[in-house]
Image 1 (cartoon, rainbow, N blue to C red):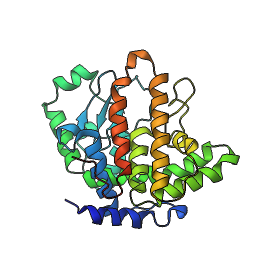
Image 2 (cartoon, helix red, strand yellow):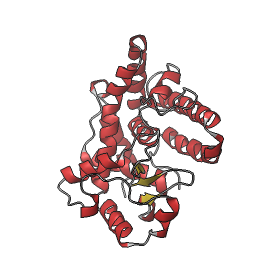
Image 3 (cartoon, rainbow, N blue to C red):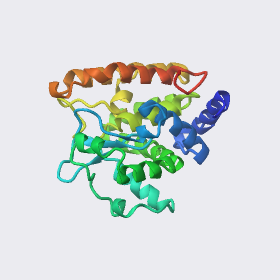
Image 4 (spheres, rainbow, N blue to C red):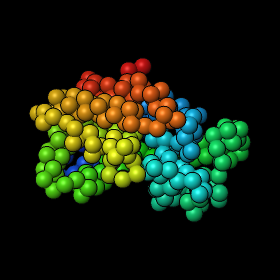
Length: 268
């Protein structure tokens, strides 16, 4: 288990040159990846394969990467096929049934959990449990690619302020964790399909809603406040059938882990 002070030092070093772009080493990515895994499913092996109630997709791996079934894509960015590419590129051998980036083979949540201890699901969990480092690197890659996407999607007049806010959050010891977790948790905010009533909730929208706090912990606090507002707005705008209010308390608890500058890990 990583020493908490060491983890903070890793994140501070990773964010020291944020303006030039965030580039995490394998160890740095793995340290944050383990925190994301804990946030998503308590860091359990069973939690690597999940399907939320009311969703039409499986949530897999440490980041609960989305996997849609054939013919039924949804509004959220599908991220599991990209992980399969990353696993293959790392030299890992994918099971035959996962080669070629197939759609999710389970028709719905009931079918998924009916097969939870079946051969395919067990094989999938073994693959995921044995590739935590690759998944962490994949999650880190999403953050490293996020800022260019955000700046490209934003009006030109807003880009300097967005860049500064991103850099100020990243300069905090726990800021890279906050940014990496949020991107994998709620996306970059650039997809036009990730909107309710025309309003998004991704990293772009959180940066847009931030006050111009100074660097360090004050910037992270401003980030958390804006993220809370974005997720509260998402809940209010969401279709009633999705019952997103059931998730808001958990989302807020997750955001509070970003404020712990003594230790990046969520409290037990």
